[in-house]
Length: 331
Image (cartoon, rainbow, N blue to C red; front, side, top):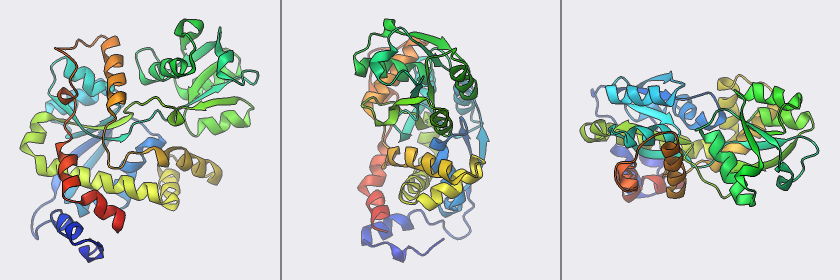
């Protein structure tokens, strides 16, 4: 670990010594699950590539669990300790009585672009058109609905079609089976090369949605709070360092997205890096959007909506009081 004397403020020095493992203290074994391979997983990859797990005395096993329900069940069973997913799965489980809580949010924006046929060069021209989404009840559908609302376009004026994965939707767009769809990087670049119009980058719109949150079992938070703090400190440092370094971002995305095209790597970084949240707090409006989506998907609310039944930011609060985030900024 780099010596902590590089920190500018004395407070920051004290904070970082708190995370220095005591000689002979074994690293905490943790299992971290993530939901998919995309640019918004950059902070997790940076966490590993920068050697931050050992710095914060953690020994991780990182696993891919595609389904949100499966990752939440794994949290509840104790087979994983941290789940990185959208806010919808932990909210759905919480509605159903599951003891899962969100402790941080790395990304509070949709990482999509709405791409349309060449002749559709303005959102108003979407009226009467077919828009492809991954599935109903997911963040894709919500992104389109919120975008239409922001543009003042009635939901009933378009047809949403379940159209499968990203590659399949791009093919459907090329075959004119769809008039528009949501794409993420690097497919957005490919769509532009093919002459399609990018009507909007969803991350630049007013709509919010917690696309990447950190969820834990509430009992784990209570019993192993120092471990949660170590993880959130390291994850926060990874977010900050990724946001500050295009070189780091390009290197990470080249490795994990298996992409060699320098233009695509740079565009991917530019598209997502500035949208991460630091400190990684959850956007409350976005949380309500996620809760509405979860309720629409069949989850049953128990009592009135209360952010504290879904979110516990006391560890983030503690790090902020101790000057941890300010210390990172001053390094």
